[in-house]
Length: 68
Image (tube, rainbow, N blue to C red; front, side, top):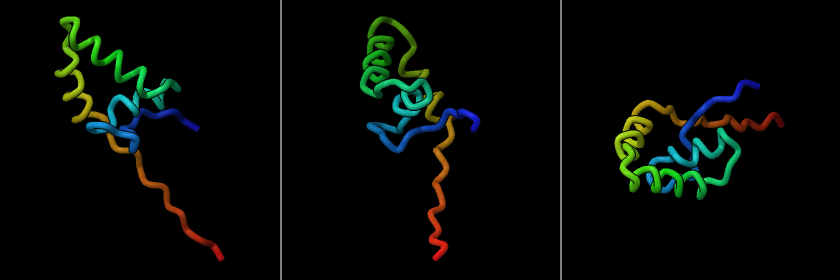
């Protein structure tokens, strides 16, 4: 199975940080805290988040069909 980066359904704003956390197999809270620190320490965190919101696709919905 190919590993892909998607926005997560476990979201606070748009699911970007949780999507990175799922991709990297980390706790979403750690990724969110790192993103906030990156933003507060003079980084371009807000701009990077907005770009990620635009570029990252939503996780496709899984079809749950009953074959009964």
